Image (cartoon, rainbow, N blue to C red; front, side):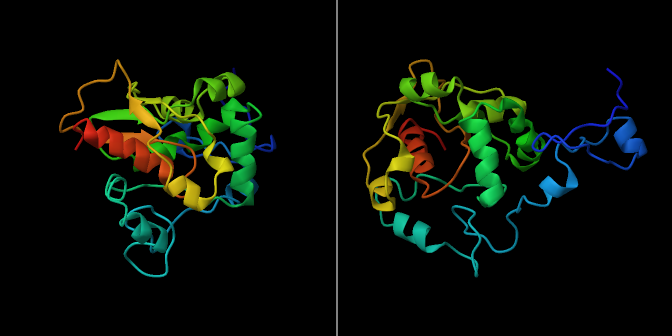
Length: 221
């Protein structure tokens, strides 16, 4: 392949016009995988954010959702903090739908570089598991694919013991659902270990808090 071919945007497939630099020529910088038009539609999360879930806020501290979570003795303090990259605007919804439901697997590469930069130093990295039904339906675990694209070594830490779609539940049902995860039989020893959990979308935080709670029960720091 000619390394100087004009790359195509992973989303709209139009040519990406990049200015050449010594860093890009010698691969010291990661090439952008989106054209400028598509890149401009991604809204990075900046400014004041909730100290727990990373949602944009007007002031510092916790958002109302996380304040309500803190009243739950089982899951309120389970998740130390969440880091999200972008807001879930209409463009991002379509990117995720194409990736997650229509099998446009290459789109995962859009996020790999930034995830590597934002990831904290931890002992183990794992993805939120899918139910067998959902895995057979999609053909891949979208969170695992994100981790693999970012170059992480992923551990089999969790299994899903209830498989109902979170997207079909309202906010109250998500927050008050029973524990949906268990520890994987081949999981490593989590005692006093720092764990990074990967997922594609953060809404109410129910999924991540349930995962974090069961990991802390197993001794994770």
